Length: 400
Image (cartoon, rainbow, N blue to C red; front, side, top):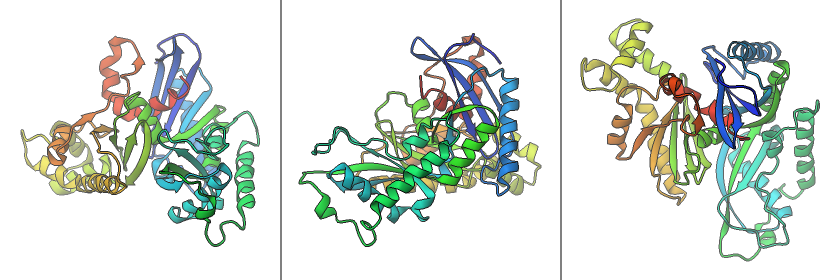
């Protein structure tokens, strides 16, 4: 549905495992204003082995949704799926930039279970600490920043990304064959650097680039879903928040610290698993199970069989939430202030209260439209679809 006339606008594209979501936002007096949106429930396997055929199918879906929604812009920001991206915190002593590059690569080898030659690395120094060397600026986004902000007009964009990463590897060859010498590189300092390290597979980045070339969209940037969710659900909120994104086939859990995702986890459990559990436990068909899920949820009113079945199906997600709490605390990090729910299953009746009582913490459903200008007469519709559109909204907000 088309809402406003054309202006500088951006399209956020969220390619999920069971749906594709598009949101077009325009820059209106330095605020994001909704132009149009669209989505379709389609099974998409972005990692399909039939790369060419699968990429063309995804590109066709995107064009079909864009056509029905009357998308005008060709400027796209997309997200890499959480399950495909490595994201973790490392601590290093203060050192010169030339040594920091090599040290980060060495540390990355301890966490990433695949050869670094197959990955593109991005890193960001967290907090307000500065390197006490003649470096003009700490490299807040090194390596993958070129992927997250690709110059998509360049036909050899991905090759240039590969070349830059390979050049770094050759430069550091020999330094890290045994172990990086931190004592030699470190500068005397009272505190270490806390660094957010992100790694994405080169072949996955290449697939996204190919998909949008086939769809004839200008891919401005690739980033992680966690950054998009932080942008749409938190805005300028600098508190420490856990976002639980429950989709159809998986649930992603991320901890946001001062607007930066510092911890990501994902499990293969989502809304479809809850539906199947109801089907098997109550011996009903899929449509009936979906109806039970939407009507009863975790409410204590009505048939108690449904809430009990749903509670059991949520155990894996709840256990993962507790594990992320423990993992975050073991890092000596801040206290998590609240949990924000998003994703298609966030509106499961009574879910926020159930989790709040169980975890003894404030739990709310996030509103990704809260920072967006839109016509009030469509507010009921937008509120209904909001949780499933949170990633695409955050992506479209990136350059506004």
